[in-house]
Image (cartoon, rainbow, N blue to C red; front, side, top):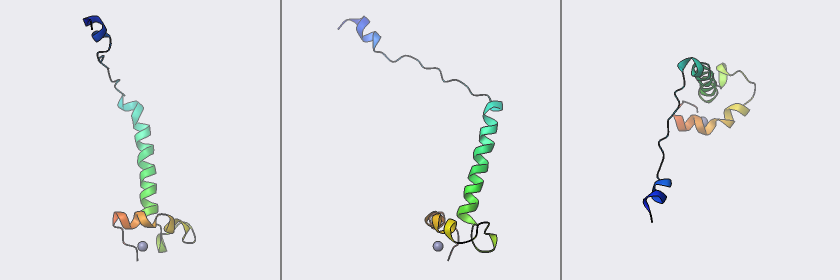
Length: 73
Ligand SMILES: [Zn+2]
């Protein structure tokens, strides 16, 4: 195999584009709010702090609640 054929399959350097903080900040805030909402539903959506009537949401996230160590029953 000649050197030129080997060179054709050699890995090429890849430049990773830098994302400015100004562009990524709204998405980081949005993701943080979604995580806080998920944390609320997993950790506090029951009893007096419940926003939604019934046990549907509580039962839906029940395994996650126990997995993360939140007090439950
Ligand atoms: Zn439980």
